[in-house]
Structure formats: C-alpha cells, structure tokens
Amino acid sequence: MPNENIVGRVSIVAPLYNEEDVIEPLYEKLREAMDALGRPVEAILVNDGSIDATAERLDQIADRDDRFTIIHLRRNFGQTAALAAGFDQARGEVIVAMDADLQNDPADIPAMLQKLEEGYDVVSGWRRRRKDPWLTRKLPSSIANWIISKVTGVPLHDYGCSLKAYRAEVLRDVKLHGDMHRFIPALAHWAGGRITEMEVTHHPRRYGKTKYSLTRILRVVFDLATVKFLLSYATRPLQVFGLWGLVAGGLGFLLALYLTVQKLIFGAHLSDRPALLLAVLLILMGFQLVTMGLIAELQARTYYEAQNKPPYTIRYVKYKAGRIREAFPGD
Ligand code: UDP
Ligand code: MG
Image (tube, rainbow, N blue to C red; front, side, top):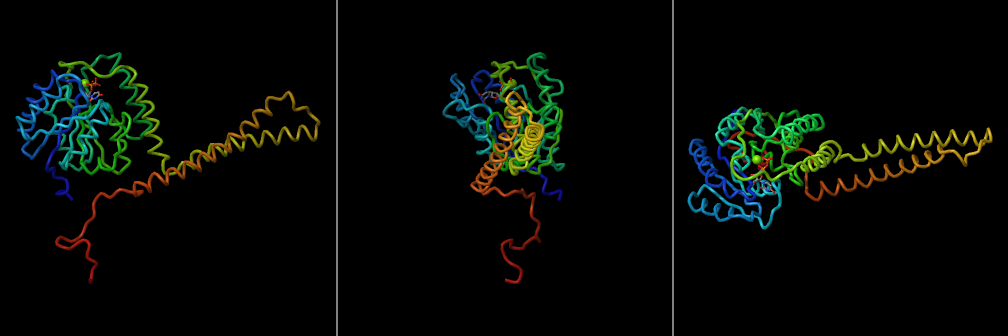
C-alpha cells in the first residue's frame, strides 16, 4: 500500500505563551522551511493566553502570510491544551508539532515527513545533543524517559521532545488531558499506530525564558499513572481491582480461619492479638477493592459508550476501485 503513505498537506502546529521576542525569528525560520517543503503547508500558531506582545505580533504574521493561522485562547490553558487546540484546527493529512521557542529546528521537518512516507504513523524527535542544563533538565529527563519507556512498553529516548510528526487520523483517536502531549506516542501506539524516532537538532533557548520548573516532574508522574491505567486497565478495571481484592480478602480469610481454630480448639485469647485486626482489615479491603472494580467497570462502560468509542481502530478498508462502498453487492 505504498501510495497510502504519500504525505500530502502538512500542518505545522506550535503553542506560544509569552514568547514576544521569538516571533520574528520564528516566522523567518518557518517561512524558510515551508518554502523548501515543496508541498501544501499551513502553520497554526496557538497563543496560549499570553500577557505580553505575543498576540499583536502573531496577528501581524497572519496579515503578512496567508499560510499562517493564529488561534488565541482566552486564558493560559497550558502547552497540552494549546497543542490540542491547534490539532483540532489543522487541516493537513500530516500534523507536525513543535515548540515555538526555536529550540526545535523546522529544518528537520522534511526528514520526518520522509519517515512517515516509509509507513510510520508517528515520528518522534530525539534531541540526542540536547542543549539544556544537565542537572535540572537532562538528568530528570533521562530518568523519566527510562521509566516511561518501561511502563508504557513503547521505548523512546526522548518523550519530552515536542518536535513530532503525526498522521492526522492517529491524533483523532487520542484525547489529550493534563500534561499529556508527551505521551502521545504511547497513546498512539495503543491505538495501533506505528511509531519511530529520529534524531533532531536542538538549540539552546536564545529568546525568552523556559515556562517550566522542576515541579513538572510531579505532573509527569501523575500523568504517567493515568496513561498506564488508560493503556492497560481502562477497559477491564475489575481484572485489576478484583485480583488485588481477592488476594487481600483471601489472606484475611486464611488468617481469620487460623485465629478461629486457635480460639475454638485451643482456647487462645484473641483480645491482645494484632493479627485479628489485620485479618479484619484484609477482609474489608478485599470487599472494597472488588466493589471498586465493579464500579469502575460501570464507569468504563459509560465512558466508552457515551463517546461511541469502539474497542478497536481501523487502519484502512480496501475495496475495488470504482465500487461504491455503501452499495451491497447485487443491489
Ligand atoms: N507553552 C505554552 N503554554 C504554557 C507553557 C508553555 O504554550 O503554559 C509553550 C511555550 O511557549 C513553548 C513550548 O510550550 O513554545 C515549550 O515551552 P518551554 O520552551 O518553556 O519548555 P522547555 O523547552 O523549557 O521544556
Ligand atoms: Mg523550550
């Protein structure tokens, strides 16, 4: 199916929060890359509630170049939400996400599109020579990448790299919440997408300042827990809660049985036995976990049915050229 893979129209999406100084150089870089692309291309710049001159400067770009669309969010919603807003407006068959601060280099885009044409659905950038501080950025990031790779089962060197290229239909199956843009490759893999990574250039931040501090680590940890749950258990929560419920309840039951035998047959006193408390605790926990699993099952059903979300994703449907797909043979 090689012709399915040809990359047609490309949408470049970048979020901006208080990036007034980068807008001119960003425009120059983007224009250069877009002119060199040799395919129809649009740029969607999302102003994530900036309170500096970002808004006006972006609007000037839109006046100057009709390939640029600017989306102004009403307040600062965060990088993930801003990206999602851009994805929703993008009309290309391929969407390239990047940071606006020019730490990513638009010159890498053609090579990423090439990878997509080889048959991948997601190409994730890898900032192998990353130009960020070691202690506060590179070290936590390499630990995070290792953990995320293990937990999601999708090994990537650099989840945090914003420069990524997607087939648009893959993004349609992925809903973004929290700080989850970094997990898109894992979510896309779960939806059946083919994922690869590619080394990309990285520059030090020359304009403006970073918008994040070390507290980001905590948010990433919580998001990872959510992603893991969504990936592995969201469709069958009882199997997880139920299992631990049975383990706890079973242990509690055995312990209680042992104590009962001691009491009834050997006349032991149970009033000063912590094990009795433990047995009661375990049995209660078992009940709690099983009922929690059942409630989660109900929730999961509402969740999927309310969105009409099928439990599968289709790559493509093949039928003879010229046939009307809806027509039943013989009708
Ligand atoms: N950003 C955003 N909303 C926010 C925070 C950041 O749109 O609330 C944008 C920011 O303008 C930049 C990108 O997200 O284009 C990445 O942010 P930053 O460069 O500060 O992150 P770092 O590269 O330091 O991880
Ligand atoms: Mg940056």
